[in-house]
Length: 132
Image (tube, rainbow, N blue to C red; front, top):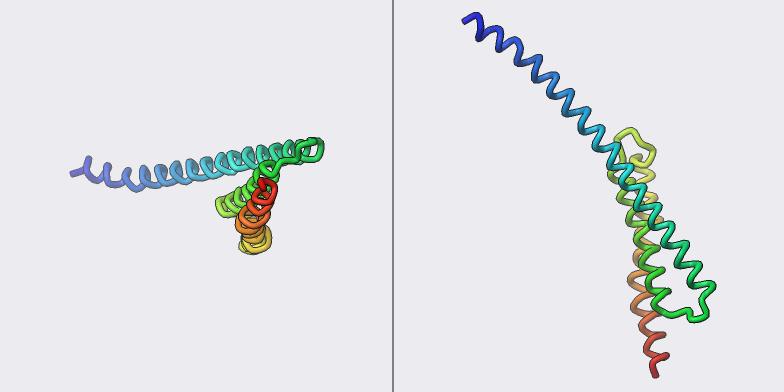
């Protein structure tokens, strides 16, 4: 009987320490996930800079470069939206007004313009007339 009471008294303490360990693991994983989102954002920035440089200094100026540029630009804002949604709770990026701004002002208009207007209407139409 006494050993069962001792085990029951240890269980709440063990449960509390396990919960604290689980919380700290969650915070660590959220912190590393934020770091893992900033690396792709930097990669998008580098790719955009290379694309702009190739487009400006290239004599060819192919329509494909414009298509890749618009897709990449739209991807940057999609990635930024993902960063703001999955940011840690106390982060500036996680504030509802920041998430709404990134979503409504940056991501959706850029996505609609780049993927639903530029690609089908501008690039495909230009490719059609150039091929004739």
